[in-house]
Image 1 (cartoon, one colour):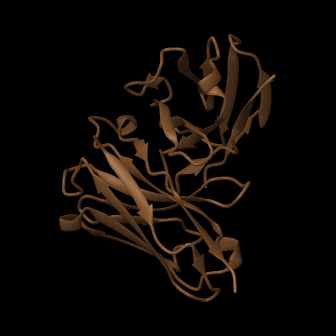
Image 2 (spheres, rainbow over the protein chains, first blue to last red; image 1 turned 180 degrees about the vertical axis):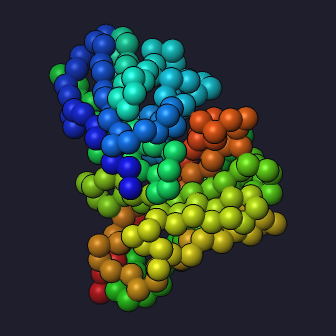
Image 3 (cartoon, rainbow over the protein chains, first blue to last red; image 1 turned 90 degrees about the vertical axis):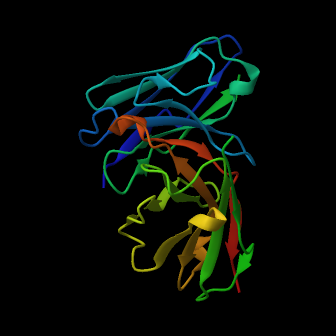
Length: 107
Length: 124
Protein backbone atom coordinates (compact mmCIF):
# COMPACT_ATOMS: atom_id res chain seq x y z
CA UNK A 1 0.00 0.00 0.00
CA UNK A 2 1.09 3.57 -0.59
CA UNK A 3 1.70 5.37 2.69
CA UNK A 4 0.63 8.99 2.97
CA UNK A 5 2.48 10.89 5.67
CA UNK A 6 0.70 14.09 6.60
CA UNK A 7 2.08 16.87 8.77
CA UNK A 8 1.55 18.51 11.11
CA UNK A 9 -1.10 16.49 12.91
CA UNK A 10 -2.48 19.68 14.38
CA UNK A 11 -1.82 23.39 14.31
CA UNK A 12 -3.16 26.51 15.90
CA UNK A 13 -3.78 29.57 13.78
CA UNK A 14 -5.64 32.83 13.82
CA UNK A 15 -8.17 34.26 11.42
CA UNK A 16 -6.29 35.86 8.57
CA UNK A 17 -3.27 33.59 8.86
CA UNK A 18 -1.72 31.54 6.09
CA UNK A 19 -1.67 27.82 6.81
CA UNK A 20 0.36 25.13 5.10
CA UNK A 21 -0.24 21.39 5.37
CA UNK A 22 1.94 18.80 3.71
CA UNK A 23 1.52 15.22 2.58
CA UNK A 24 4.28 12.92 1.41
CA UNK A 25 3.59 9.79 -0.59
CA UNK A 26 5.76 6.71 -0.10
CA UNK A 27 5.98 6.25 -3.88
CA UNK A 28 5.14 8.04 -7.08
CA UNK A 29 1.45 8.93 -7.34
CA UNK A 30 1.84 11.47 -10.14
CA UNK A 31 -0.80 14.09 -9.34
CA UNK A 32 -3.51 11.70 -8.14
CA UNK A 33 -3.89 13.58 -4.89
CA UNK A 34 -7.07 14.86 -3.26
CA UNK A 35 -7.36 17.26 -0.34
CA UNK A 36 -10.59 17.39 1.62
CA UNK A 37 -11.99 19.02 4.72
CA UNK A 38 -13.91 17.31 7.47
CA UNK A 39 -16.02 18.83 10.21
CA UNK A 40 -17.73 16.73 12.90
CA UNK A 41 -21.14 15.44 11.87
CA UNK A 42 -20.96 16.76 8.34
CA UNK A 43 -20.05 15.26 4.99
CA UNK A 44 -16.39 15.58 4.08
CA UNK A 45 -15.84 18.28 1.51
CA UNK A 46 -13.40 17.84 -1.34
CA UNK A 47 -11.26 20.92 -1.92
CA UNK A 48 -8.39 20.22 -4.30
CA UNK A 49 -8.07 17.40 -6.82
CA UNK A 50 -5.28 16.41 -9.16
CA UNK A 51 -2.96 17.96 -6.55
CA UNK A 52 -3.61 21.54 -7.59
CA UNK A 53 -7.05 21.88 -9.19
CA UNK A 54 -9.72 23.66 -7.21
CA UNK A 55 -13.02 21.85 -6.82
CA UNK A 56 -15.94 23.88 -8.13
CA UNK A 57 -17.39 26.16 -5.48
CA UNK A 58 -14.34 26.07 -3.22
CA UNK A 59 -12.96 29.49 -2.27
CA UNK A 60 -9.79 30.55 -4.02
CA UNK A 61 -7.96 30.98 -0.71
CA UNK A 62 -7.44 27.22 -0.90
CA UNK A 63 -4.63 26.05 -3.17
CA UNK A 64 -2.56 22.95 -3.73
CA UNK A 65 0.87 22.25 -5.12
CA UNK A 66 3.10 19.29 -5.78
CA UNK A 67 6.80 18.56 -5.99
CA UNK A 68 7.61 14.95 -6.71
CA UNK A 69 5.99 12.94 -3.97
CA UNK A 70 5.47 15.97 -1.72
CA UNK A 71 2.13 17.75 -1.76
CA UNK A 72 1.03 20.94 -0.07
CA UNK A 73 -2.32 22.43 0.82
CA UNK A 74 -2.23 26.16 1.51
CA UNK A 75 -5.03 28.18 3.02
CA UNK A 76 -4.55 31.91 2.67
CA UNK A 77 -6.42 34.40 4.86
CA UNK A 78 -7.82 31.72 7.15
CA UNK A 79 -11.53 32.20 7.83
CA UNK A 80 -13.57 31.08 10.85
CA UNK A 81 -15.29 28.40 8.76
CA UNK A 82 -11.91 26.90 7.86
CA UNK A 83 -11.28 25.52 11.33
CA UNK A 84 -11.60 21.82 10.64
CA UNK A 85 -9.57 18.70 9.98
CA UNK A 86 -7.90 18.31 6.60
CA UNK A 87 -6.92 15.08 4.90
CA UNK A 88 -5.04 14.08 1.81
CA UNK A 89 -5.86 10.98 -0.21
CA UNK A 90 -4.00 9.28 -3.04
CA UNK A 91 -6.15 7.73 -5.74
CA UNK A 92 -3.43 6.44 -8.03
CA UNK A 93 -3.20 2.87 -6.75
CA UNK A 94 -5.55 0.57 -4.89
CA UNK A 95 -6.14 0.63 -2.02
CA UNK A 96 -6.63 4.36 -2.07
CA UNK A 97 -5.00 5.61 1.12
CA UNK A 98 -5.27 8.64 3.35
CA UNK A 99 -3.00 10.86 5.34
CA UNK A 100 -3.47 10.93 9.09
CA UNK A 101 -5.19 14.30 9.08
CA UNK A 102 -4.34 17.81 10.26
CA UNK A 103 -6.59 19.51 12.77
CA UNK A 104 -6.61 23.28 12.32
CA UNK A 105 -7.56 24.89 15.61
CA UNK A 106 -8.24 28.44 16.62
CA UNK A 107 -5.31 30.10 18.38
CA UNK B 1 -27.32 18.18 -7.46
CA UNK B 2 -25.60 15.03 -6.27
CA UNK B 3 -26.39 13.71 -2.82
CA UNK B 4 -25.42 10.51 -1.05
CA UNK B 5 -26.84 9.13 2.16
CA UNK B 6 -25.64 6.15 4.15
CA UNK B 7 -28.05 3.99 6.11
CA UNK B 8 -27.93 0.86 8.16
CA UNK B 9 -27.97 -0.44 11.72
CA UNK B 10 -26.40 1.66 14.44
CA UNK B 11 -25.64 -1.32 16.70
CA UNK B 12 -24.44 -4.71 15.57
CA UNK B 13 -23.39 -7.73 17.61
CA UNK B 14 -20.00 -9.39 17.09
CA UNK B 15 -19.88 -12.14 14.46
CA UNK B 16 -22.95 -10.76 12.69
CA UNK B 17 -22.96 -9.40 9.14
CA UNK B 18 -23.22 -5.67 8.67
CA UNK B 19 -25.19 -4.40 5.69
CA UNK B 20 -24.96 -0.74 4.77
CA UNK B 21 -26.77 1.06 1.98
CA UNK B 22 -25.67 4.17 0.12
CA UNK B 23 -28.68 5.81 -1.52
CA UNK B 24 -27.79 8.50 -3.99
CA UNK B 25 -29.38 10.99 -6.32
CA UNK B 26 -28.23 13.35 -9.03
CA UNK B 27 -26.25 10.78 -10.99
CA UNK B 28 -26.57 7.33 -12.46
CA UNK B 29 -24.24 4.46 -11.71
CA UNK B 30 -24.75 3.32 -15.26
CA UNK B 31 -22.92 6.38 -16.61
CA UNK B 32 -19.52 5.52 -18.02
CA UNK B 33 -16.70 6.28 -15.64
CA UNK B 34 -18.77 6.83 -12.52
CA UNK B 35 -18.04 4.91 -9.34
CA UNK B 36 -19.07 4.82 -5.69
CA UNK B 37 -16.74 3.95 -2.85
CA UNK B 38 -17.04 3.17 0.84
CA UNK B 39 -14.66 4.53 3.46
CA UNK B 40 -14.74 4.23 7.23
CA UNK B 41 -13.33 6.07 10.20
CA UNK B 42 -13.11 4.54 13.67
CA UNK B 43 -13.70 7.09 16.43
CA UNK B 44 -10.64 9.30 16.75
CA UNK B 45 -8.71 7.31 14.19
CA UNK B 46 -7.65 7.50 10.58
CA UNK B 47 -9.75 7.02 7.49
CA UNK B 48 -9.69 3.63 5.81
CA UNK B 49 -10.71 2.96 2.22
CA UNK B 50 -12.88 -0.16 1.96
CA UNK B 51 -14.31 -0.83 -1.48
CA UNK B 52 -15.33 0.68 -4.79
CA UNK B 53 -17.74 -0.30 -7.53
CA UNK B 54 -17.65 1.03 -11.07
CA UNK B 55 -20.45 1.70 -13.52
CA UNK B 56 -19.54 -1.50 -15.36
CA UNK B 57 -19.76 -3.55 -12.14
CA UNK B 58 -15.99 -3.82 -11.79
CA UNK B 59 -15.12 -3.93 -8.10
CA UNK B 60 -12.09 -3.21 -5.96
CA UNK B 61 -11.55 -4.07 -2.31
CA UNK B 62 -9.16 -3.25 0.47
CA UNK B 63 -6.75 -6.20 0.54
CA UNK B 64 -6.85 -6.36 4.33
CA UNK B 65 -10.67 -6.74 4.36
CA UNK B 66 -11.27 -8.39 1.01
CA UNK B 67 -12.36 -11.72 2.44
CA UNK B 68 -15.09 -10.05 4.50
CA UNK B 69 -16.37 -7.37 2.14
CA UNK B 70 -18.88 -7.41 -0.68
CA UNK B 71 -19.98 -4.38 -2.66
CA UNK B 72 -22.96 -4.44 -5.01
CA UNK B 73 -25.07 -1.92 -6.87
CA UNK B 74 -28.71 -1.60 -7.75
CA UNK B 75 -28.75 0.88 -10.58
CA UNK B 76 -32.53 1.04 -10.80
CA UNK B 77 -32.81 1.99 -7.13
CA UNK B 78 -29.74 4.24 -7.12
CA UNK B 79 -28.15 2.28 -4.32
CA UNK B 80 -24.82 0.73 -3.47
CA UNK B 81 -24.73 -1.89 -0.75
CA UNK B 82 -21.73 -2.88 1.34
CA UNK B 83 -21.69 -6.00 3.44
CA UNK B 84 -19.06 -6.80 6.04
CA UNK B 85 -19.13 -10.29 7.51
CA UNK B 86 -17.99 -11.62 10.88
CA UNK B 87 -18.05 -8.18 12.41
CA UNK B 88 -15.88 -7.30 15.42
CA UNK B 89 -15.70 -4.37 17.85
CA UNK B 90 -12.73 -3.04 15.88
CA UNK B 91 -15.17 -2.46 13.02
CA UNK B 92 -16.88 0.24 15.07
CA UNK B 93 -16.65 3.29 12.85
CA UNK B 94 -18.44 5.93 10.86
CA UNK B 95 -18.98 4.57 7.38
CA UNK B 96 -19.05 6.99 4.45
CA UNK B 97 -19.93 6.55 0.81
CA UNK B 98 -18.52 8.82 -1.84
CA UNK B 99 -19.08 9.54 -5.54
CA UNK B 100 -16.23 9.30 -8.00
CA UNK B 101 -16.47 11.59 -10.98
CA UNK B 102 -16.11 10.15 -14.47
CA UNK B 103 -13.65 12.87 -15.51
CA UNK B 104 -11.79 13.29 -18.80
CA UNK B 105 -8.42 12.17 -17.50
CA UNK B 106 -7.10 9.98 -14.71
CA UNK B 107 -6.50 12.62 -12.04
CA UNK B 108 -9.89 14.18 -12.81
CA UNK B 109 -11.60 10.96 -11.75
CA UNK B 110 -11.65 11.84 -8.10
CA UNK B 111 -14.04 11.61 -5.17
CA UNK B 112 -15.91 14.87 -5.31
CA UNK B 113 -18.93 14.37 -3.09
CA UNK B 114 -19.50 12.47 0.13
CA UNK B 115 -22.32 11.41 2.37
CA UNK B 116 -22.44 12.47 6.01
CA UNK B 117 -21.68 8.98 7.17
CA UNK B 118 -23.39 6.56 9.50
CA UNK B 119 -21.95 5.46 12.84
CA UNK B 120 -21.95 1.74 13.43
CA UNK B 121 -21.14 0.40 16.88
CA UNK B 122 -20.19 -3.23 17.33
CA UNK B 123 -20.95 -4.50 20.79
CA UNK B 124 -22.58 -7.44 22.47
